[in-house]
Every structure is written in structure tokens, then in C-alpha cells.
Amino acid sequence: DGWRHLRVMLALCPKYLFVYPGLLLSLMGLGMLALAHIQDFKVFGMSMGLSSAAFASALFFMGVQISLFGIYSLVLNNANGILKDDQITRFFKNYFTLEKGLIAGGIILAIGLLMGITTLFLICTYANNLGHVDVPLARLAIISIFVVLIGIQIVFSSFFISLFNVREMLK
Image 1 (cartoon, rainbow, N blue to C red):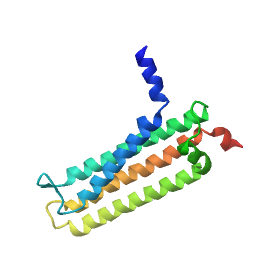
Image 2 (cartoon, rainbow, N blue to C red):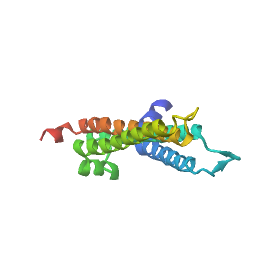
Image 3 (tube, rainbow, N blue to C red):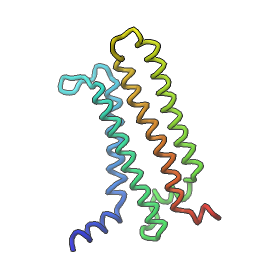
Image 4 (tube, rainbow, N blue to C red):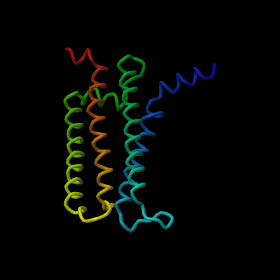
């Protein structure tokens, strides 16, 4: 049966199905975010505005989500003996701990919160006299929201990944 064969093949190739496409989406999102902050950069004669910043942030976030799902799959399949060790699983076995994941996620979360607080401060300080919100401030707000989301995702992903090696954690 063709579908079952394809399903097994896809389940056993998480790097090509999830990790690499997720990394590509993340890089595309980061590139678009960088371009959205260049004032004179135009695409088809139009400058990249808030919609581009929101789209790029969402693209980056989706890429991170997809990559993390691939990492979950790799680590779980490796822990169950289905897949052999590769660079990613060796990295997580040798260097990843729940505490390190919580610290990394906490730092990213703190950066996002700091960006959000800075945005609110700037809006309250400079935009009070404006009838609209300044576009660079709105871009910063959009980015800070997604940085907070990625920080939260990494914190909870750390807990989830640590569950795959419960035997090691309990030793």
C-alpha cells in the first residue's frame, strides 16, 4: 500500500521533512525582517511595511516551530532505537539539558519582553501627540511579540525534549 510506505518513509526522515524546511523558512523570515527595517528597500516599487514585518515574523516563527518538531522527532526516534545517532541527536545527548534549554528560552523571552517594554515606552513618549502609531514602533512591537513567543516555545520545548530521556534524567 503506497500511503503506508510513504508515511513510514516520512516518519523516518524528520531532518528532510521538518528540520531543513523549518530552517529555510526561519532564514527567509529573518532575511525579510532585515529587509523590512531598511527604509529605502523596495519590492516592485513598494517599500516593505507593517504587513511585511508581520509576515516575516510569522514566517520565522513557523520555521522555528517546524524545526523544533523535527528535533522532537529525531530525539524521540533515537531514544526508541528507531534512528541511529546523527549530528543533531549527538548534540542533544551531549550538550542539551533541561536547565540549558530553560536558560536559553528565558534569555530569549527576556529579550522579547525588554523589546516590548521599550516599544511601549517609546509609544507613550513619542506617539502621544500623533494621531497614528509610528510605523517603526509598530514593527518593533510585532517583532517583540514574536521574540516572546519563540522564548516561550523554547522553554516548553526544553521540558518536552527532556521527557524523551527520562531514564537519563532520573540517574
